[in-house]
View 1 (cartoon, one colour):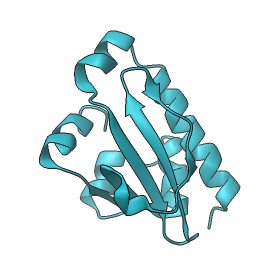
View 2 (cartoon, one colour):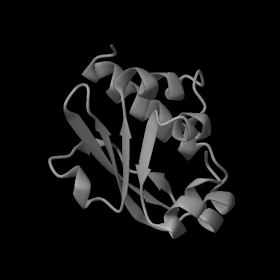
View 3 (tube, one colour):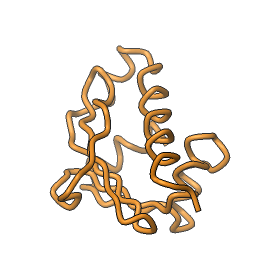
Length: 113
């Protein structure tokens, strides 16, 4: 099982990947949203804000259910996704990644998965 530091590194890696997306493309598909990522096997959650400029740094989140988009993923799967060893769309389809969001947000997110 990955530890909390591994997960923080994975989240930072994902944020860096989003930062590499062309600004015009990102602005075309992104609507500002708060995003939480809950890692149940470690009992931790992190929050960020997605906007035209990318993702803000991930911060510990005491109320992950308050975010507009909520991700739930085990630590090992998060690390695997960050290292391109697990495709997020396949993880979602197999139940390894749970996404709780409006239909509108899901349609926008699919462009990044």
